[in-house]
Length: 247
Image 1 (cartoon, helix red, strand yellow):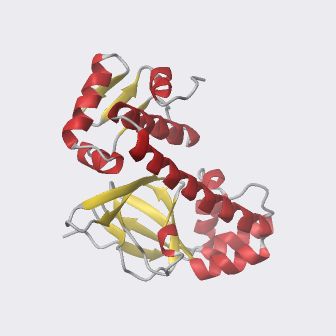
Image 2: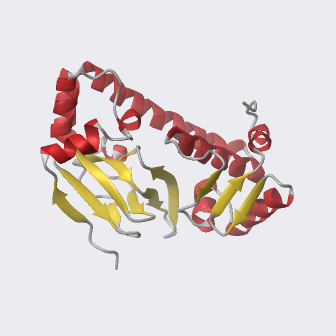
């Protein structure tokens, strides 16, 4: 049985450390906020949740009450298919929001599970809506976040509908590289929190195909793989596979 997430209150001083001066602020929040606006955003976040690896942040069908900004850790979202299998719909890392799936129906439409020990900031949605109407910069930023999610979903559909296996895995690795880079980490060397099977579920590939493509990339000298540790040797080659111009 998964460990029960721990919910703990956070003082305002600690929130200012976690939000106003947080290294992830540029990823989570709009730029150009005044100190007063920043303080009002700080006051939105009344709790943090810590989750052990394998614990659920929320499950499909549960009432939607809050968004969750990932402070540390890594998550996956899944939906249950008619045949009983879990389909991975996304992987989320620090600086990204979870819970957007519940806005429309006021119920979560997927499960969110921690792939490693993680911590999230809880943002009550009703309070966020109220503040967004008063702080237009925040409202504009929130619309951009929603738009980014739509674009990401469209990208996944294109990925599954038109790309060969090698292109799908190349796109996946390039996307991870870009996201790690935006957080100040190495663009070419990182640790995969997800399994090969979970990658396959997300990319619409069988486990055997994912393993075969990883081996092919390694044999070609494009990447070096040691269990879940990945080193991208030839990023331009991966970008070329998916039609991007190497930088």
